[in-house]
Image 1 (cartoon, rainbow, N blue to C red):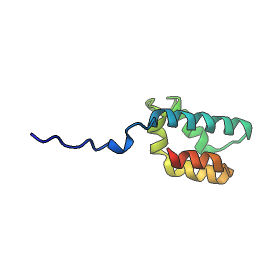
Image 2: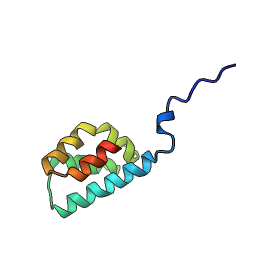
Image 3: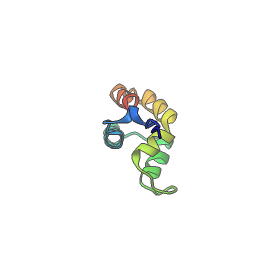
Image 4: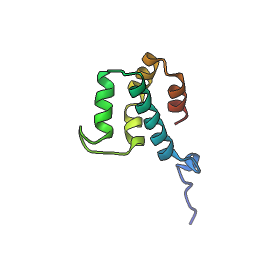
Length: 88
């Protein structure tokens, strides 16, 4: 019997969870450093912490909010974080 290829082979040896955690850590630092107030950030942070719905890992929440995160980083002119998000 022929084995089917792993459909996630393109993610082999990529630390997706670690990259997501590093992105979220950098995002939190940028939020604190800039003393920013943003309704989406408040919503997203509550999701990350499990205060608004079930708690999932950072990769899940980043994936579910990819476009709003892109818009947020664009508004904040956070090019380093934008690059991290695109790499993720």
